[in-house]
Structures are given as structure tokens and as C-alpha cells.
Image 1 (tube, helix red, strand yellow):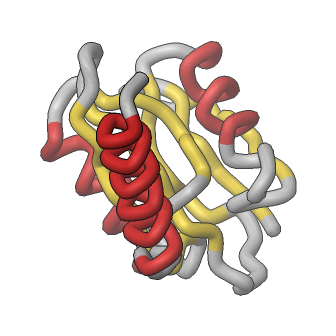
Image 2 (tube, one colour; image 1 turned 180 degrees about the vertical axis):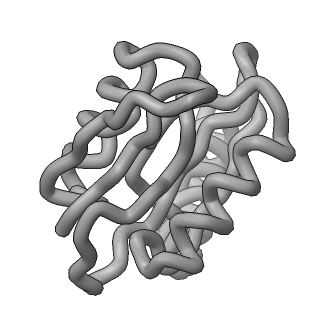
Length: 124
């Protein structure tokens, strides 16, 4: 490798490091809950979680299988707050368990059988 190539490589690495260090940390939602087939479903559940003070914010990230709901857990406490209705108990339990992972959006969940599916109720 020539001296010019080494200088160019070092300069490029230095610029990249400076950009990373200069970029402020953002408070992006961090807890994955579940994937919804449509953006409308994802935003409806995210809006519900914010309205009930389960999340301070959320995002619906477009993925291969649909829209991933990611929420930023709030510091609020709540009991049996309705989050969403799922088609199967397994899907409800999976979303409930996902919300209990670090950083936890809630501390416990239950899935209640309803007319149109399984309602996810959460507590913290």
C-alpha cells in the first residue's frame, strides 16, 4: 500500500469516526411488540398504547412481513390496559411476552378471550 493510499484510508476512517461521535443519541422506540400486516393496524395499536400511557412514543417500522411496532416504555403505572386484539391466543401471548423484555413496557400481561379474538391486557 502506498503512502498516499494509507493517508487516504486514515483520513476516511477519521471522518467516519467524527461523524459517529458527532451524531447525537436519539430516543427512538426500543421495545419490539409484534408485527402487523398493515400500517393502519400498527399505528392504531401504537396510538392506543400512547393514549393509555404505556408508551411515551412509538414507531411502525416497515419490514418484510408487515409493520413492526416498537414502543418507548413510559414510567407510568397501569393495570389491565387494553392494547390490541389478536386472532390467536399464541399471537397475543407472544406480543405480551415481547413487551416484558428489556426495556420492559409492562411487567405482566394476560390474554382474554373475546368475540373477535384475544385481547391483550397489560399491567405495570
